[in-house]
Length: 569
Image 1: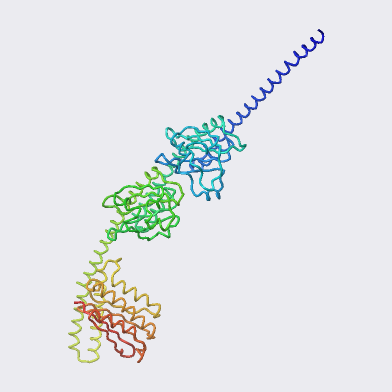
Image 2: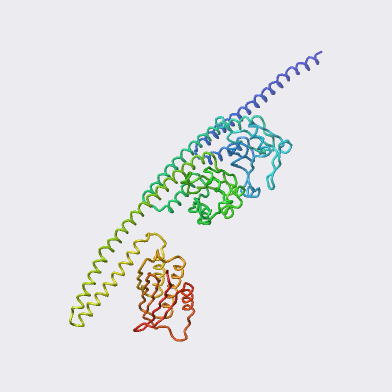
């Protein structure tokens, strides 16, 4: 009896002790859970503050991805931004994958498999084994192995902006319900931060758009050449759209080609001045139908486009530069292959910018036309005044001197009067040449200006400037075929003088009447007997082909006179 009593008493003493240990263990476990929850809440709050402290969208997306991997202790994390179509990924921000691994993979996912499932069904998804899910599409070559998976959507207001993807817990375990709750809370805060960053980015873009438009309009209306402004348009378009490359392609309707008139950004020097046939060009549809074009990969959309062949561009946005009959061509922005795609928000900014730039360029062209017309009117008035007043007075003076010369008794007086008459005649010819020059558009590539350029080019070789006089309607009476031959003959004649004559003076005289007569006279050593005459034969052949001839004779006092005559009528 006594033994039994002691044994039962001892059992009753041990039982409360065991219950107390269980209670203490449970209390400790709950304290650890509370501490862990407190730490997680604290980390979540820190993450929310961190992602909301910056307004640059790229930085915000990167911080959200880093915060997500830290909160759920994941090895790999990614944030996929859904494109405007709503069925694929336009941007992919990764954490935990090195640059070398990304380069080996080749490109970011486009939204297939499990990632596509989250796009189609935007709700949290936890998987113990990615490959076992029926929607799994596997991984591309060189992709790190991944099994555990947790994904949650990011909503901006009522729109699904993208998804957070986490893979592989650092401790090798599975993602649990608490991980899902924490990540969902972070995604909610991320939606607010993304909305703020997008609003800020759009505001900044609109500011840049307004500044760029003001700068372009000011440059055009202040007299800057439209070609220079084209470069400004391309540069500002690139800034507005945050693009790698921007270019202005003007349409040459006669040739059926686009000409890259201006370009700015990566690879701009390789495409500037490039000509692209309408057929196969990416901008042909934009120019023809006056509508914008947004493509994910320009090389797939237009593989024959010369720009796509020349540069490895991917996403592109093209808008018409003007509308209807005033359309000038296409304004385009592009990113490198694999770069971020352009959005409809970017399109809504670039389209009115291109329209306003086209209007400003059109106004500048009209202003330049008016200035040119005013200049031509002034030149025409000056030419008429020279012809009707100055030449007539000089002619009358020459007639008077000729009459006076007949009355002079002394021979030396008559010679002086005759020299004065000859000088007046020479002056009249020079004034007439000036009148003809005034009647040519100042910036036109005229035959007269081409010949002056040829003569100027030989000034350095000769060591002095040749004397030049052009008489007659050189730019109106000489057809292009004769003009091309004339330029070649003048160049050959001056080249011969520079190489062989040793001259100290050269005179180039061109007289345009019923015949075109070129006279090149020098005071050099003349043409030696038996010397090479291949250049002279070429000039003679050119004259004979036009029904004319070449004549060479010695100049009084030394030197050579070359006469090249061809009929005009």
